[in-house]
Amino acid sequence: MNLNDYIMAHEVPIRLGCFLGIFAVMAVWEMLSPRRGLRTSKAVRWASNLGLVLFNSLVLRLVFPAAAVGMAVFAGEQGWGLFHYIDAPFAAAVAVSVLVMDFAIWLQHVMVHAVPVLWRLHRVHHADLDFDVTTGARFHTLEILLSMLIKFAVILLLGPPLVAVVVFEVVLNATAMFNHSNVRLPETLDRFLRLIVVTPDMHRVHHSVEDDETNSNFGFNLPWWDRLFGTYRAQPRAGHEAMTIGIRTFRTDKWCSWLPGMLAIPFVGKVQDYAINRRQWSDSHE
Ligand SMILES: [Zn+2]
Ligand SMILES: [Zn+2]
Image (cartoon, rainbow, N blue to C red):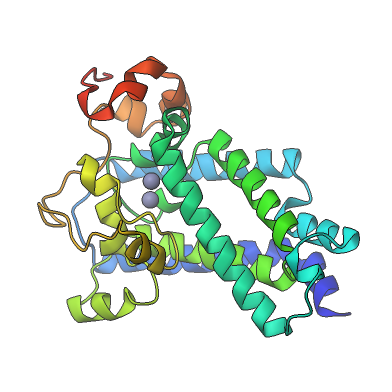
């Protein structure tokens, strides 16, 4: 069995095994060394956040059964994408593919903050009143589907090796759980890690209620794009313990911690209110 066949046959157990393993490590780490006290019921949030993850996985399997790996195989069969035109060494093709896919995810993240109708979907991720390992996988189903379509487009243009797609998905999933987790890292370790990966302290800034802090640190995986494009912010003004997490206009458990409210968030409020100026949008949802 060659590498591609092995990946195709074992993609789901590889990804599920990595997810469960890293989730367990981060969940225990959060209990042993938490960065902040949680503001809301952990049982309710975890049930909702993990319930949403399960629901999204089922919907994704139904809508796109072949997923990103299937699209990479399809691009290969058709000879579509950059790496089917140039004869790059395998390791270089994998490295460049992972880098380009990470940049695409970063750009997508900037876009869902900038475009009002897409921000409606993305605010489900930001409405979490606490910030822990389950926040990292909490996205509205429609945003998950949009992400997959964007990933398909990147794969069709890039023609990445199959292994690059799986590596990228596993690494992105792992780093998202790591950098959303409520763990305390020694300051010097955090400063060193930030050079190569987005750390929890770095991404927590992005979950602040303050607009200028939310509009920084868009990276989920590699920290370089934010530094390169001027959206890097080292720390929150109020400090990590005192800063307020979430969105100003959604502050109740009904919207932020219970699954039905979370799923309804994109459809609340008038679109033009956001289009004019998010800062002045003071209408809060009880
Ligand atoms: Zn965001
Ligand atoms: Zn986040």
